[in-house]
Image (cartoon, rainbow, N blue to C red):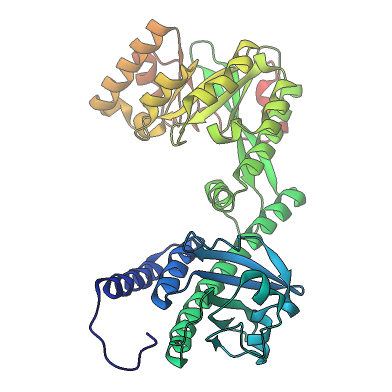
Length: 424
């Protein structure tokens, strides 16, 4: 890079050029929020191309220079990520201010830096640095490389090379900062929504069709906001920004509040992901409730990476009387694994199997087999989304007597629910 005369390519040169090309292609397609993970590889590539011992990316913050990313050859591990020092005493500050040139062949002999503490303490020989400028014109920090040995070959071509990379790094950082700002805005929006009281619970009765009795109610979350957004969008956004457990905790608290108003022997079901159940605040909250009247529903769509940890959390809750349900059975591929891994008390049949089951022989066969499983293992079945009399009668003929759906009751607020539960 520093030679002005054409030279034959070496295998190392070709490898470094390929590494840099690979990096550019990776940046094009990488998802927001993850581009920063490419910086260590990029810094390695820069350092190797320039033949330097140490490379780093620094950020300027409140008069400090903070080392955000560091690359070294393994023998000169002088700087660690997270280290910082006064900005005014650094090469970086001098380069940005124009007091120190972008490249120095031998810092030990250069008038501008030979008396710097860093020159003495780190034994800086060759040094090259360029500023990282953001779109608004602000200086983020610098991209730097140095070695303990002098290097007379450094020249403006190397500075140009570093400047091109610094522009790329600036674009990466700009994108990551914008992504983080978006995340923060969404988190704030979720918090504002919760604080405003827009998040509320409604309850849908689950009926025993043999007796006509409401045996349980399922708590469902609604969001009274303008413009309207369906619940799944709020929960998806919360998961995207790392607030899913917070939203689930609030939904659980609001959903279980109905317990104080339910007749004796009536249960309340609440949806909760396996991940949220591992949250200590949620565990503490549940332990203080009347667990023998609570059904916890784990959705079929919920990905459970560690059944053992989840079972360890569930065991004391279930021993205290809480029942476990697998929700949305038949909506995807995880149902059987959840049943085997969690041994639920209740399996809720998804509406995709219930819809027009009276004319769907395949769905009838699946439900018939599920009824045999439930009877053999002393488990309960609940059919979701029942909307026609024909569906309900077919389900009863197959052995499913616990149902919920618009045919019987829509989700409703507390006052309407009390009217339904009032003895007639």
